Length: 96
Image (cartoon, rainbow, N blue to C red; front, side):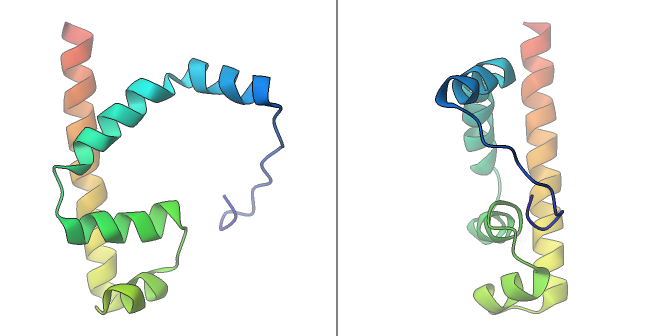
């Protein structure tokens, strides 16, 4: 959010738990955790640095001792695989 210059309003503990319940966070967290097992450790680290830690590709590359282009490719491939896995997960749940 910081990278996008978006101010996140502070939430009370009640609002925080309410938002998590509305977002179905435990189920989503479980699905993401499962999806992460479907990508390589290298892709996991790259996705974590880029998405969770909001690092620039140059920083991701430095941390992983690879080129910025390789960092970009690793993040892209990891996110693409995660998205496919999550789409498959939710399609199965919708049909069940």
